[in-house]
Length: 476
Ligand code: NAD
Image (tube, rainbow, N blue to C red):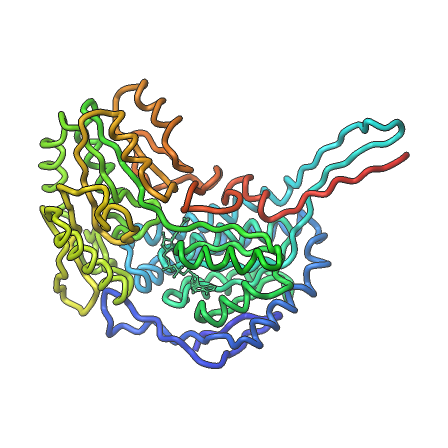
């Protein structure tokens, strides 16, 4: 059985969870222990005790540690990619790519360790000088979802450690294997006792203990909107700092002047890759009427040709849905779209493959009305809604007509519309002629409205959450 890592030791918890391959439910990846509430408290105490020395730990040594983590991840890229594909279900190339991203993130933050920049300013009072500096926040609770089992943990753990914080990390219950492998690498890199703790288990016990703990100074969470809102309310009661990355209902606008092939590539990638299980997935495709018929024809053809199957098999483009509950939910959304009067032009069906798994064909709905559930709620599966509009102006209004605001996209050859969209789209990330999903690691990641709360993740913007600002006055 795979164990938790608490206060410098690998420890068994009170129960365990079985990690099952969603492409082959007979393939058991392993048994993973679940931490008890007492063990989570021990992890927080160990992190608190380690903070004093870790926050002032030599920055060269800390930087080298993160670099070692990056190199160790890269050295095991293929093996970890296979593990990730087996537990989460994304295709092997996507899974290996995700592991590579985790390595890049650690490498980036090994450099950021040396960038704890401050400010020096003269005072309005004679003889005084002012220093504005940044300090580590304290113990950070990190809570992650199942859809990026190694990249999301990496982009939270790396900055937390880089800026001198200690970590209590709870991965999603569904996908503990990649998180556990990452923890092993972090431990092998020589991170001191207590600085990094892994507590696997359920949200309602392990997660609740973290978010309610008085010694957790900051919570970085990625997951659903409902749990994010619950964390916001809980953390507000004790004034803990929070960073919440939640759902999306991301629009992709396709204008008459778009390059048709490029627009179809962008839509296919954004809507269906990773089985649509990306917070940045394109789920509302808004198309102007001049290109509508040609786009639908090509989009449908390409969607029907997508290969759904075993993520480990060469040629598979769309793996299974990651869990039985998500699978059922996707099919329920397909039903709800039909009941509300949308037209299902292809896909949306459960399909049988050689092994027992949660396979479904990617679905396209047309004749979608903006008030339908499939057009308003995050589905988190391979289901795309297409909406027809007359003008760019109408498309923009429709794109912004959502409670979410994570990413958005437009396909156009017009500089005028591209610039206008970049300025007026109510999303944290705007893409022109590229999929709504797919980001760089050295620039801010995050959204607006109901998608995100708190400061941005990734790149140097991560410093905002993981550090606290201090203003010191000195009379010389
Ligand atoms: P989820 O909210 O169910 O779970 C996320 C994490 O929170 C898990 O580790 C879970 O165990 C934990 N959790 C559950 N209840 C908790 C509680 N009461 N207290 C503390 N922790 C608790 O989300 P999920 O199903 O794992 O992931 C899918 C969601 O994640 C989607 O909504 C998707 O949009 C979102 N997501 C967002 C981003 C982003 O950056 N915006 C990225 C990836 C996924």
